[in-house]
Image (cartoon, rainbow, N blue to C red):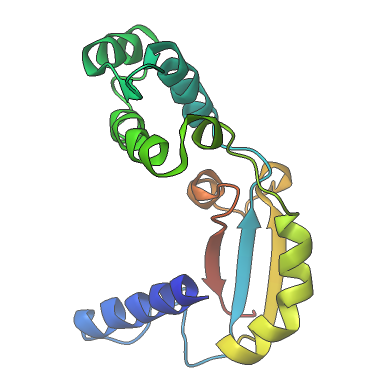
Length: 167
């Protein structure tokens, strides 16, 4: 909920910085608001590929990732040009340190995120001041009304969100 509030605040702040009225078709927080939540059932394919690479270069004895082998494997897999891949792989070491290897490599959720959010709808409407909250499964959301960048941003446990105004 804090992320949603912060994102909406940042939009308002950016619009105020421009010093002009809200552009036609742009989100206007002073009008009735709709929150579109995109829930992902699976992690993005690039993360799954990175995870397989990490498993291959992970040393269980000293609980570390060999970074030179990691870099070579990421390049061989064709992920070197993806700016998200190496930071994800390197930061995964922190997950291993904090959670242990078994828990870090098991990335599934212990709950049905879509079901929880459906049950939370009245709370979200009341607390965030939206006139409507729509929940979509990212992998099933198709059509021009769904922005591909937002669909890619959704991960299990980290829904993506889009603010709109009713037409």
